[in-house]
Image (cartoon, rainbow, N blue to C red; front, side, top):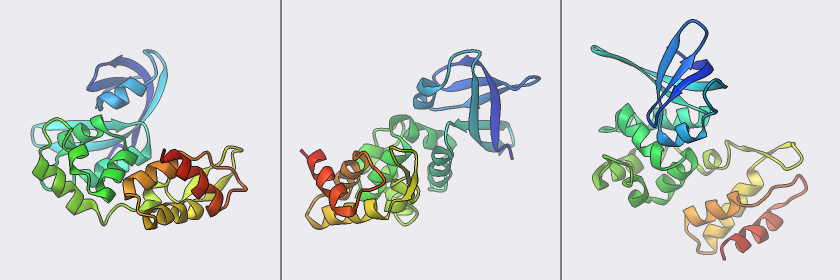
Length: 200
């Protein structure tokens, strides 16, 4: 319904921000992580929003990136995870960390979110494991190189798969490859060597 809200930050709390668009101040629900990354009072912000409409409530949930909004939308499709639960999960982990947890079956990481128990965390993994992929985790198939060039992340995917074949867990492999500073001339072997250094 409302794709995004752009304006000046009028007020911030740990769970809410008021965005002044000029004639209207929108109350937008946010996670503590988002609150910590917002600009200061009076500065401009753009939040991608999810609109929740119920009989007795009209709420906006805001995110600094489309990626966060996308993973939130997937989260709230899980039975037992409403907008409040989705925001709670994203308050303790980033979109990428959540994907890592889903891919590697790390329910303990997800259940650190307030109000999310072990069974609910396992349901998140079960319901979403086919809806997230290595490509999603590796910056949606494209990566920004140090020189500013956009390149395909196929080499990164191959490096992750090679690490998994060597016996490393999926989450460890993903973290190691994501920690590599990519340059335009890198091939799979170079990425793999640098990723292996991140393992120690």
